[in-house]
Image 1 (tube, rainbow, N blue to C red):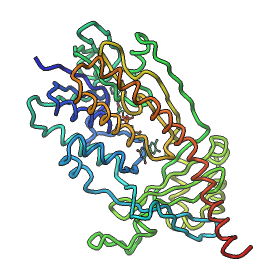
Image 2 (image 1 turned 45 degrees about the horizontal axis):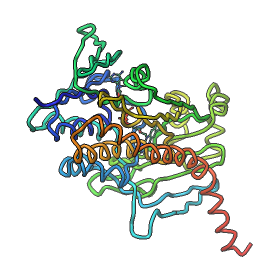
Image 3 (image 1 turned 30 degrees about the vertical axis):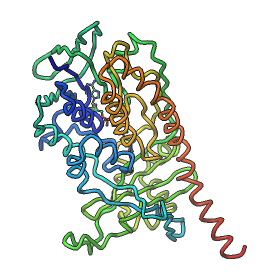
Length: 396
Ligand code: FAD
């Protein structure tokens, strides 16, 4: 009898985990509390960011799970070979990531998630993958053999499902992790950093022609940064010629600006005049004031599993990190690869989950720390380096 797994969370990591387990013959049911994001009428989407940077860590993990799926899911990526630093006077400087054309890649979060969900729908293995939307995990009763999961649904009230084991991919506020904490001596730390993010938008340039895929308002093969020490703006290209831009700054700064349209306008024009020309100051001010204000938090825990191979957490549920290293999803994809590699070597799930927690912890602590440190690099150090280089060149 094949084993059954309940995967909680049909975000990016949950989808990849579902595919990976299904390909190893498990009977997979994937739950999400949201409605199906592919449904036109769905308004309750994962709004964390419009686009993301996917790096070789994430790409190689996708390829490890399924080469063909990776090709299809990544067909719309836009390679960014470096970062473009915009100083306050509007000068731009390209800092390439590597000498051999190494790049990170911009990808639409919604599109990637939908592509992966489509792959799960058409998965044609020994067992189908069951997708259950509008199912919010509220409780798990961990047993010796079966894990009883209780879900709240809008149309069918409370529903219970039993699984041999559970995989929690339900994000930073993971209900799976919370249920595990009641049963396992699971160390857990959560830290909000004093930074708020707001998504803004650079429309395609008026000359943009989709047939020729250009011209773009700013270089599409770069991640753009407007570093200003205490705050910064970034922008990543989209396939339609536009850029999704994100402002990062302290809560005190944002709260001091937002009540006043004039203050926001003054602030944006004083600090990002070139970006405002691209966005249009009215649109930028409106977005700055009206768009959701996102909080950034880090989650660290240890171990990542419940004993007896009963449950494990992957992705942000296990290690939410600030986005400055662009590695949250990449690292979540890598979790799936690391776990599958262990499972491929050893069929004893209890041992594998224990091994996973031991092996993965050091790497995850390191990347959460690197992500925190990279805020200083992006908002400040990139300009200091630029400034120092100019001083050298100018002979000052
Ligand atoms: P999530 O994306 O949070 O998905 C969790 C899913 O679980 C959701 O669909 C949710 O509806 C569901 N869920 C939650 N609770 C329940 C429940 N009780 N029952 C059922 N379902 C539930 N990462 C990168 O690699 N590169 C980047 O460039 C990047 N940029 C970022 C920019 C910003 C502004 C932010 C905030 C994050 C960024 N990240 C980036 C991080 C990345 O978004 C996350 O690491 C990634 O989304 C984690 O995926 P996940 O599937 O683990 O969790």
